[in-house]
Image (cartoon, rainbow, N blue to C red; front, side, top):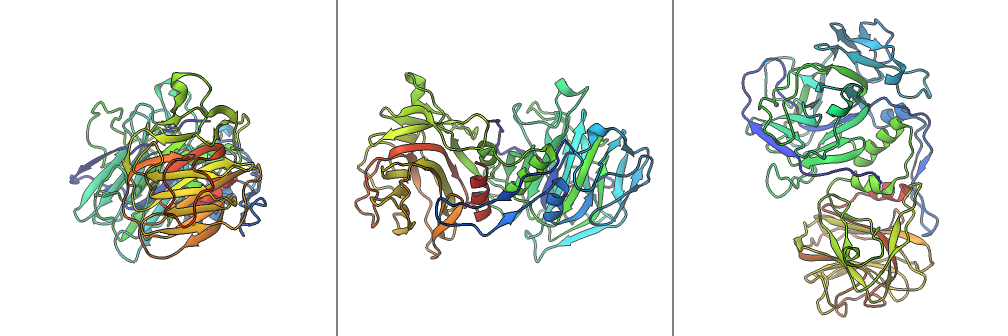
Length: 565
C-alpha cells in the first residue's frame, strides 16, 4: 500500500506588499488539479451491503473522468481539447477563455487522459510566461464571512513549477479572497490565500523532504503527470487557535492523498471575485527566499503542461478528490489504505500487519505517518489473514484469544468530535473492540468511550459521562469480516455504522467534554457501570485496519471507506 505523508504543513504570514496584478489567493479554496493521465471507463461505485441486512440507498455511476467532474458541479471547467493553434480555450462549464502569448494546445498524445465518452482528448502546453485566462469574471458570494467555499481542479506536468491556477482581481481592491495554487522551487504544491480582519497573506506549503512532490530533480527532464488538490473550507475544524497545525480548513492533496493541512490564520472573505487564469501569474504570497525547510520560492512563470482545469463553488470532499484522481489514472476504487490516508483529520492508522517475532513484533506501526505507534499486550497471533482491503496482495491482521489487547504508547486529549473505525471478525467471540480511557493497561478503570460486541453479538457504542449507548440489532458473530465505525459530533450526536451503513444513532445534544487517555483495541477496562456491557473483558477474534480521526466522519466518508475494500 502506498505511503502518503500527511502533516500540518508550514504556514507563512505577512502583510501584503504593494504588488501588481494578483493579491493572493482567496478563501474557501478546494483546488484539485486533475491531471490528464490514462483513464477510461470506471466501474460502477455502489455503497451497499447485504451482510448487515441494511442497504444504503445511494449509487453513483461515473463512466469516465469528465462525467465525474461534471457530477461534482463545476462553475468553470476547461478540458483543453482545443485544436492546435486555436486562440480560444473552450469550456464545458462557465465562460470560454483566451490563450495569451505562445500558449497553444499540445498535439502530444501523452498529455491527454484516455479517450472515453466524448472522444479524443488533449492538454495544453505553456511555454514560459504564457497563460490562458477566462473571458469573463467569476463571483462567488456567501451569506457572511467564513462561509463561501471554492474548489480548483486540474492535472499538471512540470519540471520547474510556477503558478498553476489563480484568481486575478478585476481592479485594485485587495479585500476580496483571491485563491492561488502553485508549485514551488522544491516541487511542493502550495496554496496562497488573501485573508481579511486583519488583511493578511497566508501561504501553506509542505516542509518535509518526504512530501509527495509535483516534480523532483530526478524526473525534471521527463516529469510525470500529477493530480493536485488544495481545499480551503472555513466551515471545517480550525483547531483550537487560528492558524492551528491541527486545523483542516486548508487541505492540500497530491495524487488523491492528503499531504498537509492547516487552519486559516484570519477571516476568510465573504466574496471571491475575479478572472481565473491558468498558467503564469504573479505569486504575491511567495516572497521569502528558501529557508532550508525543504521549500523554496516559486517562479511566477509556469512552464509545463496543464489539463482538465475546473473550479467549484464548494469544497470537494476527500472522497470526490480520490475518485477524480483514480478516474484520471484509469483505476477504480479498491485500496482501503489509500482511502484512509486521504481522509482529513486522520489521527492514527494501525494496519496491524505485524509479523511474528520477538522484540519489534510487539510494536504496532502507525501508517498515518504521525508516529503514534502502539504496543501488543500479551501474545496475540500476528500475520493471520486480514480484512478485504481491495489490494491485489491481501494484508494481514492480528488474532486475539480473549486475553490480549493493543494500546497506544502515548496519552492524548481527544477533541469533542472524533471517530474510531476498525475491521473485526468473530466466529462466536465477544468483547471490546475499541475503547478510550485513562489507562493503557489493566482492567480496573472505566473507559470513557467504548465500542464492543455484547454477549448476544450486537455492536454497542457507549460513552460514560453522561452515559449513552447505541446498539445494533443483529448478531455479527458470523465468521465474516465487518467494518464498524463509531462517530461523535462536537454537538454530541453519536452514530454507529456497520459495513458502511448507519445502523443506530443518538441525536441528543449532550456534548462530550474533551477526554485525556489512551486508545485501546481488543480489551481492557471495567465495564460494570455500563448499561450495555461487552460479553467478555477481552475480545476473541481478529482485528485489522484500526483508525482514529479528530472529527466526525460523514456518512459519505464511511460509505467510501467500506466501498474501498
